[in-house]
Length: 90
Image (cartoon, rainbow, N blue to C red; front, side):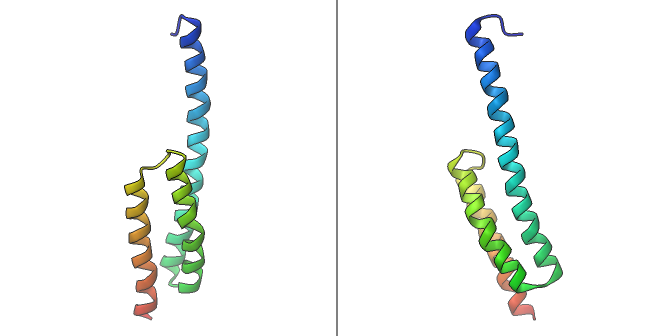
């Protein structure tokens, strides 16, 4: 347990920041899930619109420090390829 006033304040700040980051991470996952569901349904137009919404959300998470830049870039790249593959398959 924190004893000094500064340690107690740090604990409060960490708890507040953790809650905010949890919400941001959840939001990103929701956008990614929508893209995944559209890909699974085979609807390229829905997948494309979901992907266009998810991409800036992921990069916003990067700028907020929730996700690493390379992780976001990798996810975007892989999703982009899968969205394009729907069009090629049908």
